[in-house]
Length: 332
Ligand SMILES: Cc1cc2nc3c(=O)[nH]c(=O)nc-3n(C[C@H](O)[C@H](O)[C@H](O)COP(=O)(O)O)c2cc1C
Image 1 (cartoon, helix red, strand yellow):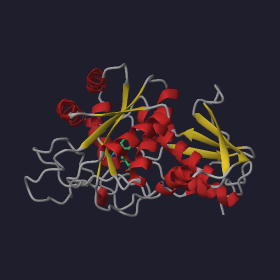
Image 2 (image 1 turned 135 degrees about the vertical axis):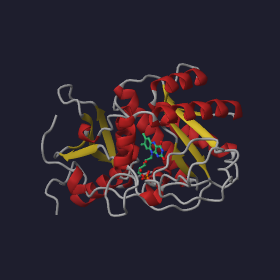
Image 3 (image 1 turned 135 degrees about the horizontal axis):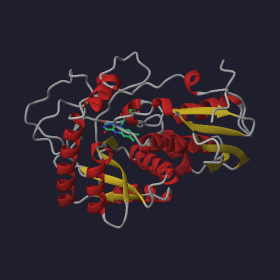
Image 4 (image 1 turned 90 degrees about the vertical axis):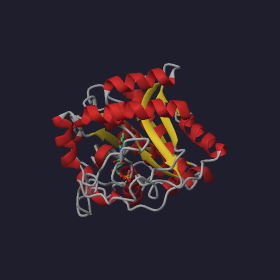
């Protein structure tokens, strides 16, 4: 029994526990799970955990905030699935900068079927680094994904073939810049290629196939050098659906909001039988992120690049137990 988990507003202790499990199912760069939660009688607080920031890959903590935004969307949806209405205050206290949001659960109103569908997708969503089937994602589903981003004030740009080839070149350039940085490589080796028993970092068994030169996009090898080689020369799906989730600002607020938009896109994909993975190199290296911004036009800030399609099942990645992430302290 974790004494830090208490009833909050109209939610019982058991409901709060379920809500927190849903929040921690969010994706995070290298599965660092850079969040902490605190229960007060009236609200669940979501804190960024800067001790889990990736200094080389994410020095500005932008992706850390994206991951916390994804956790916040999960939290909101889980609260709705219990028939309560979340009232979210973002960055509520200036003097506590790691406090990203305080979420109250007050009024009661039954969840809509759409909300239930998204909440049900939370434990099913996984990062799928394997090649997808050749089937194209129908335009009607692409439109659902766009609407999911817009529902959270984000923008999802689906790249055409010529934009994809520019992105592919930028992604190679960014990947090489990262491999040339010994701090990035050391951090990478620390967080990836993990055994199945570890509760954070990326397990080797969730890696995709060994990257090969003819692959359109450089896929990161999470296997710690032990990925299985597939048939040499066999490519990933020939017409991948590559989307860039963008925001209209690049402030902390905008990044938290973009994390919610990213997660709504991923859950909408999952609910519609689609698999997804991330191609983050290009948005981690400042020069290539700037070039991608020019490619998108419209002043959009690219926050994350996603690959979406029809995949085969992949294993889940573990999470830390709630005891490790729910705190009783009042930390700033
Ligand atoms: C901001 C962000 C960036 C990520 N970048 C990558 C990436 O470049 N390549 C990749 O394979 N996975 C990437 N991931 C996925 C994480 O590795 C994954 O979420 C984590 O290992 C947990 O696994 P799960 O998503 O299956 O729950 C990223 C996730 C987030 C939130």
